[in-house]
Length: 226
Image 1 (tube, one colour):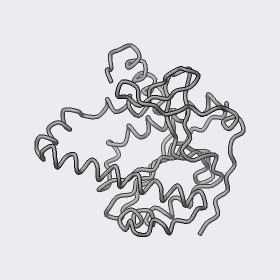
Image 2 (cartoon, helix red, strand yellow):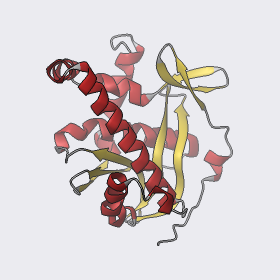
Image 3 (cartoon, rainbow, N blue to C red):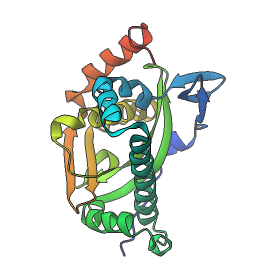
């Protein structure tokens, strides 16, 4: 088992982290009596709601709800195993989750490309962008400072479906830089699928920053309703 080095950022650590709250049915981040909408909720508006509605109608609401709950549970457990591993904690307690543990084992070589971990599950806000979010991992990946996101999936994803992941990671990058004045421009998405496939997608945040700001501006102007 690897022993991952953790090097928390003193600037981030010196601030009071925001609290996650639910306000009017939307996830938000609260600090100093101010509320900052979750970037995940904002970006969810990019999803093809018409396509999702058609899918729900085709399979039926009960089946759709079951599939969504199963996917959420799978993702939560997969995250917990990966987080325990990266935190140098025992992962044996997850051994009865055969599917998720198997996905972790397939993803382990990709996780071992991570080093110098600044933080795991890091809540942040941006006063400039007026958003909040929680970064999965901020660390080096292949020796480069990175924003790293862990995803689980039933099957491998086409890269054209992953733009929302990159936009989300770009938001974390901009929030972290606002707090620490340290640019972290490499975006890494690790996607483990139930069939044993692991995708590692690496991008640069500058390719997505302008589009992200446009989406946030549309939300703030009221043209995007959540």
